[in-house]
Length: 578
Ligand code: GLC
Ligand code: CA
Image (cartoon, rainbow, N blue to C red; front, side, top):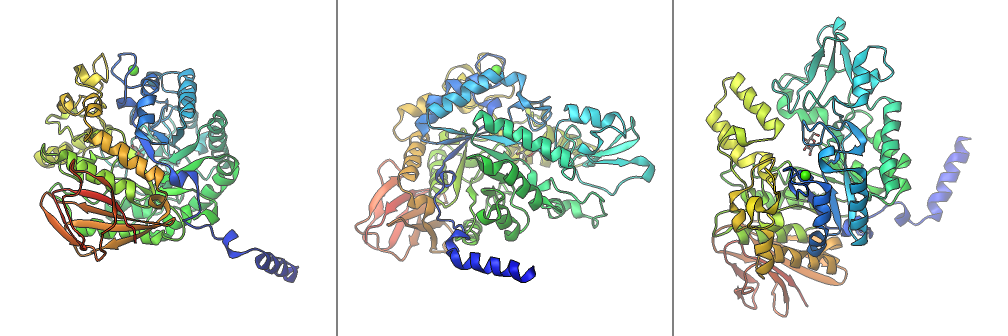
């Protein structure tokens, strides 16, 4: 029997060329060629004047989205939710949040997108649900409920469970005591976000059914929220003291995570033409690879955080470090696997305020420079709504202006432990995710044209000058520059599949690289600083064609040598011809 098995295997191997086994990064896929535009529905456009963005609002802006050249929308959660965490606490996975509209609105939105050739990626929030989900209500009702094991409970008769860190709780305690059944439930996020128990096959099959429900409606993909935390060692062993400072090392990629992903792939993802992307890429390149190697049949891509976490300090960051991180991640996925490229999302402050320079002098230039970077790297670009306008941090002074539950809880926590409140307030001005959640700035009318009512979070006062209507009229606006580089990416597949090579590695100011493949070679040169900077890229750029430049007058000081002098935040894309 054993010999037979081996013989069978050997024959199969001999008959199949290696390529059938190893799917490579250069293999063509629509989701690699996509440019994803992320919409935060709450802040995009309010159609009915209640101050909250909604699906009809998005529908009314579909022609605008189409005009950007993007071909996929990732929508943050729109399912029924009590909104403890703006939709990341789902109380019914098969319905639409009342504030956002109805299922009819959803159907109309999907139809309108597909008519315009735009695909839809939905957020899939299944590490946890809302505590107002029917499953949790049943689960907490009694120790013998058939839903008990949909969540993680620890009976208090056994004493207190080993500590687990909650990211969002006021006390950062992930175990919440419930007197109803004298037990604790687990919540890695807020206490209104109890963690689902993925060890339970019934729960898993309910989730797959729910995913199929959306696939049958015709959606085109899922973004797996916090899913790397879904698998847990349910004996809840003790972690070393101080583990919470590095909790991800203990929480990410728990036992059976890959089994769950393979099962999800087999049950759902492989049955539809959908893309899948994981939030987080584990703790090692191996973790990340294992999630996205096509041969393993798990997910299509993951987004790693090392890049977006770089400017954790408002005083700035090192360009050499930035280059090193993005080059390293690229090299690890150069032949196999696939990643996403992004510098912002709804959990981050604004891209230009963190990675660029949002002073009046440099906001536009630095924002366009960062856009150039995202659209010319390998990996699928994810671009956050409003960044195409160069929207900036709002920098609230008062805690009352903030809306983000995790920030408000941390404020209370700092008060409770006698923390330095001034330092805390300064920190959130720079880093709080509410900075990225202020309403999209459509025009110079009241509330930036976002709502006729009172917006759920304040509009950035700079909307009078930074808005879609004004930028439409200006040929050199961030908006029109964004359209231009998106069009270049769509047109030149070398920017998707081409090999990436870093040039002038030790240059502390300039990020220069080439992309080569598909019979073409592109050169990208970016000055990441507010000063004039120079780079010797080692390639003469004579006969090359300038495809994009973020200064209105094109490239100023390029001669025929390999030496390029760049103005502050200057960004250039060339097609090299020799
Ligand atoms: C993810 C989401 C974030 C949310 C958290 C809990 O990190 O991006 O917005 O708060 O998961 O669901
Ligand atoms: Ca509304």
